[in-house]
Length: 283
Image (cartoon, rainbow, N blue to C red; front, side, top):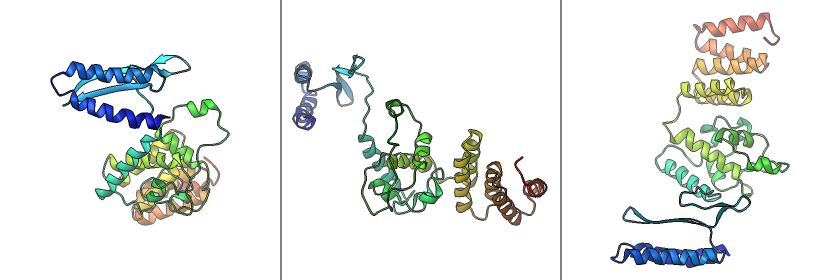
């Protein structure tokens, strides 16, 4: 029912908005109001409307309820959820970044999203995410209504995408996946807000996550850093620290040793290797 209404209403608004610049402006505004009110009175439209001409706002009004359950009315400045329309903006920004040469849609997301689980990241390309062919599962089916209505940060959404394995091999099937577009949004933030991250910036992210108790995610970030900067001793040292805090002391020894090989002057690696040899258990 909404689509025929929009097809019929948008031409009217387009003509009306163009006509606002003509001398009888008040009459045009009155016509816009009459058309919208007629649809609203019949229960065929609810929302907030803004009409502008030459950068000047000439009409703003809200119609119907913003929340039917609570009876909150729409106002001119009411913020509305755009739902799936956000995916179009996300895709456009990703393609713009690709056009600027800042990312490659055919690259795996392991290159751009260290916080996503490494066992899947090397198999999924940005193209898979854009086309809903990544195999990443959606939100848990056993969620209660309050969990669907809760507010989540972008970091929270990446963590949700980390929870499950792939439902199918990337590129072999189509299945609409909001989580995939959440990951694209995280990639936009990671790549679009600055040049590709330096070793120190990624390391800082890892330590911030570790300080917030997200040890597994921090380890994935440190793993990403080691892969991106294989000759940097500091990346190995940080990854070793993550494994040590996780209780995986054998892997911690491996990366502290690698760090010391890359930089024989790394006193921290030497000290930690000595402590690990004397006290193999947690500390």
